[in-house]
Image (cartoon, rainbow, N blue to C red; front, top):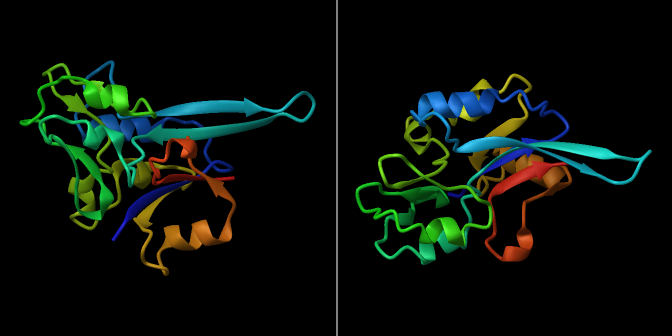
Length: 177
């Protein structure tokens, strides 16, 4: 099993419902976010293209944040989900420095926090909060190793990219183009 998120950039309107759902579901403190919206404009006038993306931890296959954690607080959970065990975290920030996606923050209680793909919901058969509230249905979540899954079908049928593939982290958030 390998959980991935697929986001259709042609359908995302940047409404931020995913951000609000994440904050609500995970009790993220005011002023912090586990996910966010990015707008990127490419090209030259008059052939500009804009991509709107919901970004978060990429739950990489080769996560430098896990490899540099001195206590083992950052670890890979079943399905490839990268998590932080708050009780083990000493707040040293090594993982923050190692993450090329700037996807971690220091929680006011002193531990490092980040997106968890709402694994607590997934293990109950639910979708991550961000996916479940998306009004344009641009966000998809599932098992990449199941060839019949929606995410596997989308990635095999549409052009897509991941962020910063040159890092070698092998991210597992994909953006359909």
